Length: 274
Image (cartoon, rainbow, N blue to C red; front, side, top):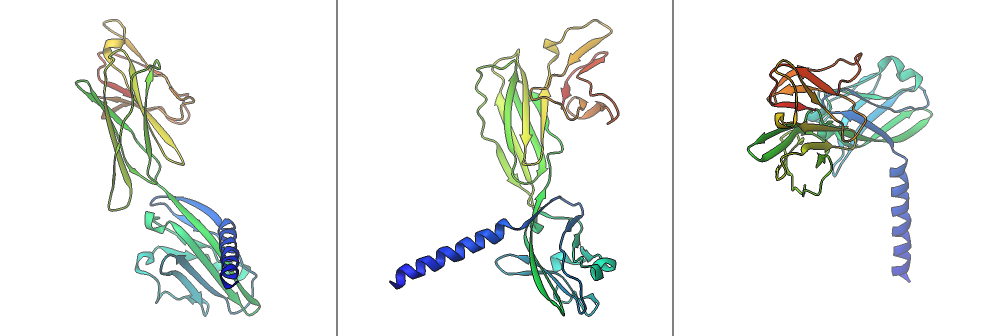
C-alpha cells in the first residue's frame, strides 16, 4: 500500500513541476547583446527584489531592498552586467536588464518580489542565440569545404546542388566548441560531378545562411563583360554578398536596394555568392 501511495505522490509532484515550467515566460536574447527579463508585481512599501538563476546551485544575479541595490552576494559572473529600472519599481516593475549576454546566462531565472502586502515568484526561461553570420565555401582541386563559426546553439550543415542530382551529399560535419561555448562547424565533400553548382547551408533555430560556389567553366560571356548568375536554392533570398576569391567583398546591396541575383563584371574569377 505504501509503495502505491508513494508512486501517486511522485506523479503529482512531477505534474506540478512540469506545469510550472510550462508557465515560464520565454525570452530569447542574442549573444553579447543586452536583454530584459520581465517581472511585474503588485506595488507596495518595503519592496524586496531577488533575481536568482536556477541551477544545481542557485546563483544570485541581483538583489534590491532598503531602497537600493544589494550586490554583496551577487555572483561574480553577473558583476557590472545587471540593473533594475529604478524609476519604475514603485509602479510594480522588477524587470532585470542584463548586458553582454553570454551562453552561460541561458537557463531558468526566478524573480522573487515582496512588499508589506505579500510576495510573489515569477519564472523566466532565457534562451541565448548566436545566429549564423557568415558561411565560407571554397574549393581546392576537387574538394569543396564549407565552414561557419561563432554559433549557438549547435547548428546543422547541409549540402545541395543545382540542378538537383543523385550525387551523394552525405557528410559528417566536424563540430567544435570554443571557450565561450560557441560552435564552429566544418564539412567537406568531393565534387565528383564538375558541372554542378554546389551550395552549403548552415542553420540554427533562429536563422540560416547559404553559400554557393560558382565556377567560371560554367559561365559564358564576352571579352569585356561576363554575367554570373546567382540562384537561390531555397527562396526567398534574405541577403546577398558577392566575394572575390572567398574573401574580398565586391558587391553587397544595402537594405534599400532590390536584391541582385547576378553579377556583371570584367575578368571575374573565383566568385562566391552567399
